[in-house]
Length: 462
Image (cartoon, rainbow, N blue to C red; front, side):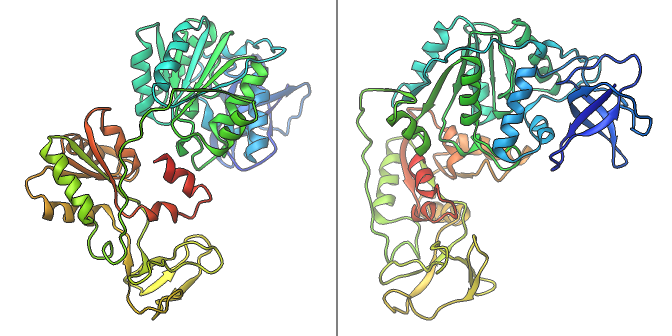
């Protein structure tokens, strides 16, 4: 017997190995084999009769049984083709870690029946969208998979769903053993509810199943690395293949999802329009270069702190640019039309997209003015400015994407107790629905100058 094994490597084809006598093996099962002088875990994608003494033998089983059914293996092939990733890399990213041949992950072998037609996906937008999604989950009779953009949201939903039934988690917030044990529990029907991040997209579900995607607009649903595909697209394909119900929640849906809703491919469940918060705009020409807090923003912070409410100052992680104090023009790349990054040390401007660099100009390319100065504020500079203005307030900065480990925990605790938090978008999770009194955007133009065609979309989502 010969096994074709796919590894986590940028190689389109699998590698062939000899199956030792006496082994019971099936496609969709993980094994350990020698590859380029090392022992690597791979996925068996096919078995065929034959004998070839020149082939290396498989070394051992990584799982007691298949973790992917034939239907799931077909879905993996579809994902790898759509994302231009290898089958092995796709499996490595979307499966729980193996626990060895005693792990007993054998429930994935069942094939869900292919439905003649799937119910139309639903998009929940507006106030109360999570409550409405929870009510639909509460009324579901089969298994439910909730896919969240991050571990914190997955954990929060696991706590909410625990009121209904047993919940298993498929994210890095729980140990490897718990993630691996959740897989067969779902496949066998021993667990009915599951939460996770995109690593849960292939979780086996007993039909009738309900798939839920939270905060569809979040970039975390399509992170860097393989497979480069949005969780939304995988769940839509899975819905079509398995006939599952699909619920999507988002405050600011992506352009793709809005188009699907507008064309009738997704049913739009929109809440009655609610009142928008009061929004004030400030002209920062000639001000924001020297001071991150405009007079109106400083006044709003003072009033909010006096009312014993909390303040969040949103900043961009991008480096500063060069702007004209006279007309407000930001010096950009002539080819890419993006703001050039300003380097104080090198006295140069560089494009983050194409890499072109140029010396600092003497005059503004638009109005020929000579008052050019750095534009953009980082978290540390904003924090110092706030401390100078409000010395009695508790102030902290927090960027969850930039810090890890014990330092991240300490920063989070300090930010959770602070009166004023300076941070990136991820810091918004620190605020409850009633605790935030003011949200101020320091230099919001920087959000629009990201080297990303979705910059405007994501600025609106913020």
